[in-house]
Length: 439
Image (cartoon, rainbow, N blue to C red; front, side, top):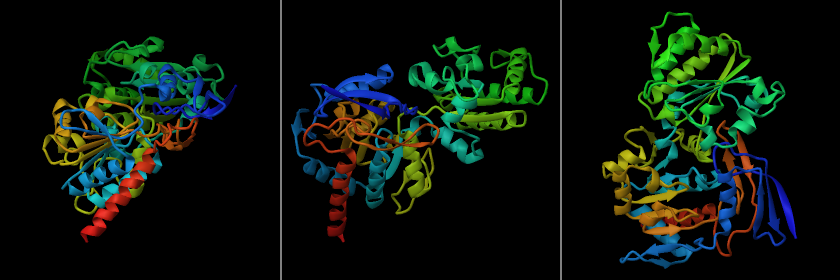
């Protein structure tokens, strides 16, 4: 026998699909079937039953082998390396709950650490641009119900956010978009013809690294200014044509991804995209939304903002919050050799950081808090597996449009396994003990 749980949040990407249904066994310990999720989301739910799953903390030995330890021992070790370090780095936070993030930030304040999330290597430039010029945005619900002109600029949701198009942006039938994709015009701007581009009404192949010029040309065309014959590999006639398509729409939404944030121009590209959105509002309604990756990277920026006033790259080593991306960002600190202790949670820099930074993480005392055995866990001195948020424990998360949503517990975690919030609470108590003894 089984029971079905409905209205579950998928803890994979920033879309946070909230229509997942799961059949679980009567004892609540096994997931039998997953409905409505994409292939990646389904795999994440089903992974909790992997026979190879690690369920207890482990310490790496001199010969490279692992020795099982208790959560209390792992908490004591974590607290010691953070308290002993002159400038500990506490990185990740994007695949865990807001509650766990809040506890982790309290630890960072106590030890004078640097708190940084995965935005530092993805949408950090977006956050900088938002601080520069603000952002005219909306919710994904408004996109579904109202948007009839959709632009995907430098992103490929067909692969990165597989249900985004069916839930919100192309195929979904909303209050004013009752014909789904037939109610909308889809434009994709990308240097290469992606699977998302194959679904578009208009595909614009911009030259690599010249997004700024093309965005500026759109703004000029919108105001009727003359353009050169070719801009960023796109004929001026095409730009004028697309501008007319946008002006004729009732609601334009620009979705942009790391193809814009990581190409030449970086935050200035986003400045220009936001300015284009503002200009469009002189002719119709327009909004812009960043395609955030990890399911709670948006939440990490929110919680850091509540507690310290900055969304990433927060340096607490002087006893107060400092923010200076390029100086206080993870890779810069690692490459300069300023970090002498590291806690990684809810991310995998071993897979995504430059090899120079990964070598530095390997060389210093590092604790990895992660349900999975990742490349980061492999190079850490201590690996602490925890229950999966949104599957084995609930918690608050923020969707890519900054809407907070509560995730739900679906099944029980393996016996004796702590959640990341519970483990961080142990670490905080140990840190307070060490700091108290020191005074």
